[in-house]
Length: 536
Image 1 (cartoon, rainbow, N blue to C red):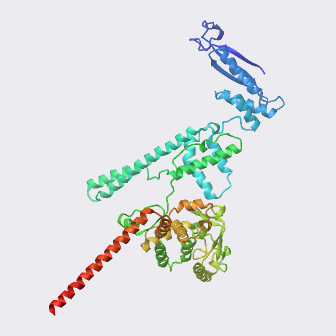
Image 2 (cartoon, rainbow, N blue to C red; image 1 turned 90 degrees about the vertical axis):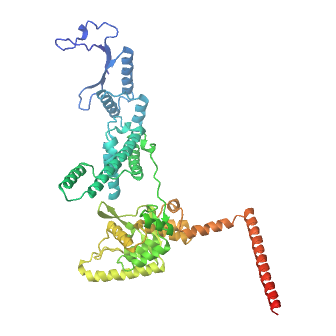
Image 3 (cartoon, rainbow, N blue to C red; image 1 turned 90 degrees about the horizontal axis):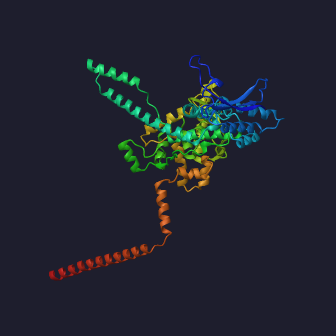
């Protein structure tokens, strides 16, 4: 195909404004003109012509080098490969039109061979939309991905070309998120200060009313209270982007995943702490919880279950407290998978909350499908609960909603997981026990099993953890008396010379004390004898 290099003068006639071209008096000057190239490209599928054109070269040598580069790219495909010819032609037309650097020949050869796109105009936002539309997971998972994309990924990197996304771009995004957190905290503090000031201004008096009006206007102009983007959310944003880019690699759109290499602050998961007497006392004084994850002692758990014994959902609280079901699993447990004769139930589903809506779903993980053994007391509690449910069914008659679930509303319909949490928090507050979350009742079941010296693998299987390491990570310590027993047992295993010396010293001290006591007793006896002799 035709291609050429040529000199070009951009000088214009001051009167007409037209380019002077060959009539420019300075044209023959060595450094006056620039060089340009033009290469004919294969025609479009409709037969229309197209070409690669570029100018501004300072020397003929530089212009010829780029022309040779363009011809080398065109030479990558065989004459009978019509699809490959069109791909290379489209790539060169885009590079020319957008004045982009010429692609590397060997990289282009590799992408052609791998069937990857040569025209990399797809943006991150366009790819994320395409990726999300193709996901086939439960609705709550889609909603979480959509939030990450809408709130964080699109605003920060959505405009960037997918094939040119770099680790530095992601580092800049997370830095911007951290800066945004600082701004949110400052704005929240300003709004909080204004609210507190407003509460101190009396209602009566013209001056006070004017101050209140001005302060309310200032509050209306301030941003509303907002939450910061915490470490866990940032990690989830990274995970969402990483998953989407992995799929892009799988579809041969890109070859590198920058999200796999960007470093952000790790999430430190809170450890489960037990409500000891000391921690309870401090909470009563300050109102502060030592950790977001708090666990009741066996005595506190028993006190709560006694307090809620008359509650309609007592069987649910009992089951979670002793067998560690998740909230959604308890809400979605069917009678068909609950075998009281065999003292077991099988977790096969759950009710999950999406926004305020509720939908049935499979367990959270494959390990969530599990058989849970039931003790005699729990079986008795569930039998009494079933009798009460049968009585409710009879009372509601034809209005009864037959969901087939163990725990339902009074008319048999689904329990809303969010309402179950609200009810639990109200019951805990009314019991005047130290606060825990509903999920912490599940954590309590785990600590009780560990305190009963149940093997860690059985505890992990009962809870539905995919790996015993998860169980060990959440529960690094259990109830205090268990730790004390373990410490004493461990200490007795190690023979120490220091211990032997201390024991010998203790024996000598005890012997000396006994001798002193005997001497004292002997002295008293002698005194009594002498006294009696004098009287005689």
